[in-house]
Length: 365
Image 1 (cartoon, helix red, strand yellow):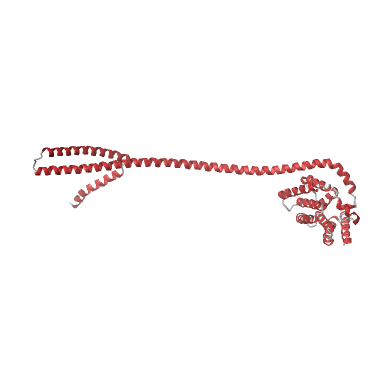
Image 2: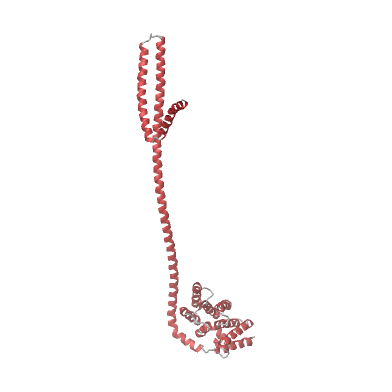
């Protein structure tokens, strides 16, 4: 019995919950449609109440002498109809507000969709711009590398063009140079430590080309790729054209250090050439620094007992001798003598020349 009562009591509640669930599941269009229908019903009801109210007012006016009880009943009916009209108008107002709110929500939703579309378009455009930026950066990097390579090629071509220009000058001066070199090859002026009567002549004339090359190349063969440049520098130095020989030698030295590194025999050779050019210009301090650098490189790369090391030691001893530093020159000359005796033998002509140099050193002390 109790269960049946509970079941009967539960039916209206479950129906109410189901109706609320259906209302919450209604779409916005359904709500608007239902609201319009309700508004139409309310309008009809309003018109009906207005006609009833007019009828009541007409009845009251046509029976002025009616009974008090009937008049009270009519007033009560009029009051109830007016209250109903107020409720109907309130419902119509709320329905209009709902319609306006629905219209506003539709506009907001449309604007929202429009903004979402713009966001998607901007995201796509941003991704495209990122791809374009990456491609442009890659092209820029490739262009910078190409520019750097072209600048390097340009410097190389300019250097080769300058060498060709100097080669033309050498061809024009070849015959004159050969004539100048032949009588000087046996001239005692080219000895490392000349006699006192020849000192002035040594200071006034540059080192002859053949002797210049002999001092630079002793014990070390110039590679083919450097031979043209090497001969070019020696040519101009032997002619006393130091304003051409020095920059050319410095440029070659810089290029060699870039390609082969500082500690390379070719770099030592160019340092030796530049040192002898400075020596002919009486720039003894700069020449000594270059020869010491060349000596360190040759000892490191060729070994301490290589003939090229002996040649560099001899050139350094000559330089100290020209500066009057005979005590500093003597150990260098002795070491060069030891190397040449060990490598060439005691009966070699170079050993005899080295002994002569050492004797001149001892004599000047």
